[in-house]
Image (cartoon, rainbow, N blue to C red; front, side, top):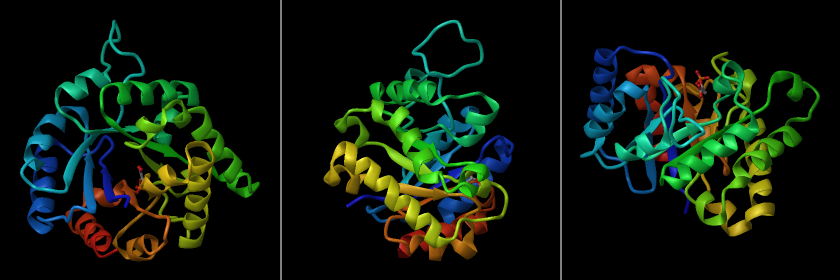
Length: 255
Ligand code: PEP
């Protein structure tokens, strides 16, 4: 059975003091997560090691980096490699968030390299995909997302992709308050699983968690988590508020 996952994405928010308080509040409010479920905190680079050690003793909690460089090492001032993350014991890394695609010009080809760097270092990638509104309006979202998977994720072997997580995040729903309906989310997740199955086989496709991201909050989590192919959520804004994210984790644990 694939895991159900609630992943927080703090982006470039919170001071260390605020972040520390938030993690303590989460661990206090939802201290035990059963084996079939997982909470992942994608925190800024400077907080990774500390948050990683804070969650060590609480089962079900993991941390993720929000990015890594596509090359192994070298003269790239200010960048962080997958090797460095692995050396800190960081288990997950977001790859291909739409904000990085948009503001940092990350192409499908560069993201394929990042996926390889993660896999070589035993870091599980959370591969983000999703279409802009113009593509949705033209009803081309299935082809668009399939292409993102084919040109990036499919660089991974069967064995490697078995450790990956996919996050479907329609760009028009990120930070906008406009969530995809549960029917839209389910339809796309089913499509993604079929694209995965066509390439990697049904059995493997059934094992890969597919998260939904885009204005997930406590009030819509139950409905989204009720969809058979929605295996959890990647949560931005609502993950910065302890009570909201805790309620999302509780919804997940019921699903
Ligand atoms: C995200 O950044 O991945 C995200 C889904 O943000 P939000 O929940 O704020 O829409």
